[in-house]
Image 1 (cartoon, rainbow, N blue to C red):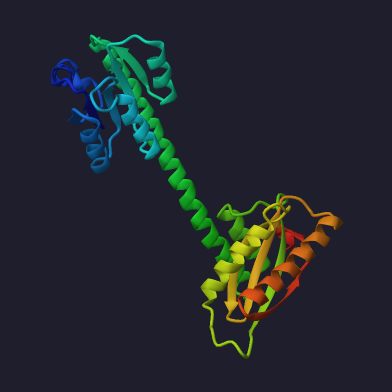
Image 2 (cartoon, helix red, strand yellow):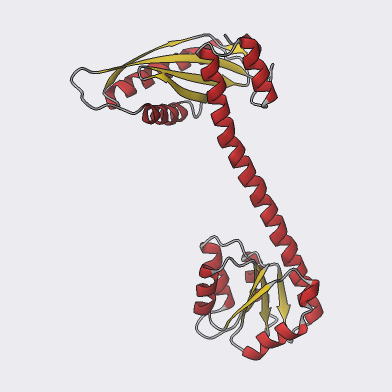
Amino acid sequence: MKLLLVDDERYVIESIKKNICWERTGITEIYTAFTMKQAQEIITAVKMDIIISDIVMPAATGFDLVQWVREQNFRIQVIFLTSYAEFDYARRAIQLESVEYLLKPIDFEKLEEALKKAEQAVLQEKHIEKLTEASEQWEKDRTILQKDIWRNLLSGNMTQNQFCESAKRMDLYQDGLIYFKLICFYMDHKAEETQKWEPSTIEFIMQNVLTELFHSFYARVDTVFCENECRYWVVLSTDKMPEEGEKIREKDLLDHFVQWMTDHVHSYFWCGAGNWSGFSEVT
């Protein structure tokens, strides 16, 4: 892990470097700064994990530095040092989400414990980042897989049983917990318009506009894909079978969408929608 020591008094920085048993910590690189400006330059250039900073310094305080760190969204753990045992300092340190607030003269055993606490926070943060990245990647992969199996089903390259088996195996859907509606949109370019839209662009527009329209509705836009330059499929999904009133509103939303596409994409649109059906009933 990378550590930045910030203090305008050089002997303080040197005493920390000398009196901490670094072998008992996870620190592998130590950087030093004597002003907020120097610290900002280092933090901008190097991905830092932990900062140990004095509070009272000329020109700018340790609080100013960490406030800037938070505003820039750098995920860095902070330990504050100060010679002043003031309540306002301690409160500000808490507001800035510091790991620890220690008084000078430095108790190096306490500082080492604070470092270990900060290291655990860094490891936890990195673990959460990895989980978040994995989740985001899975959502991207899931969208691709969903689009692929629907395309294979609707083009006749996959039977209903194969579709269900594939979806279960890839953990895309669960039988009994989801319902679908298939909608086929037909697009016919207006004769007077010369602009041609790429299918990927139309997919993007449809996905975003329909998602916005159905944002407060019971259904989700599950998949949008192009079968050919004139035919696009949309799959809506929901966790419960819609009631009659919801189905009427659904029709109004689709009519509104068709009109919006006709006006903005400069092509004639019309659509045909199937009935809501369970996972194993999809045809």
